[in-house]
Image 1: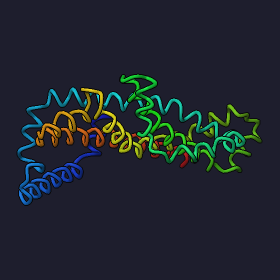
Image 2: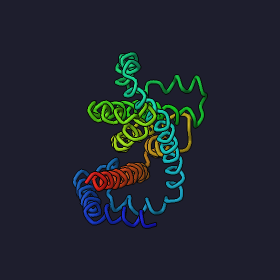
Image 3: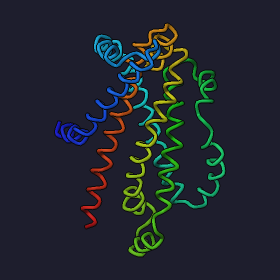
Image 4: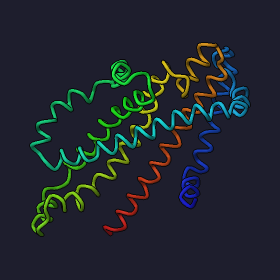
Length: 256
């Protein structure tokens, strides 16, 4: 509970003001344009509260898929990224393949995942894991590769082997990179899952916003769903940023 109180105080007043300012701009813009597809914030907010149980159910499905994908991708990408940095010949062998696959928008593989895994939860989760895997692995690898040779040689001179280097050098250096990659990847993860949830499912915010609301011309409910997507991104980004700052503060305290 103490962590959550500190997180709330960090998010605090400035972000609350930003949220209120966004609502004011939304309300003014809706009043100026006065078109059905752009409803007023004062009309959407009561509906957001009224539809809270339904929105919470769809939000839980979307958030659950994202969290599972984050765990899977981090579990696989961090060891591989460190291994590529630790074994330079391995990195030289795989780097052309990574350079070829990394820029490809992974959402194009969705039909392949459907054909291989069927229309299941795992097809969406594993697609999202693939997106996050490459982003995390590349950032962790590149961060580990920036470790100075002088530091590595000095630790080796004390008799450290590869396991000691992994434990005392590479792992501590990769944790900040992992958190940074997760923070940067949140927007991509939500966007990819939003697209994947628009087809062949009836649970998730992608389905709620596009299929249930937009295609039925329920614009107020569509904006209520968009608010939930924004909240997911905001909460995940804030939580990761909090732990990233705590880690950096801890590391600076240890080195000082």
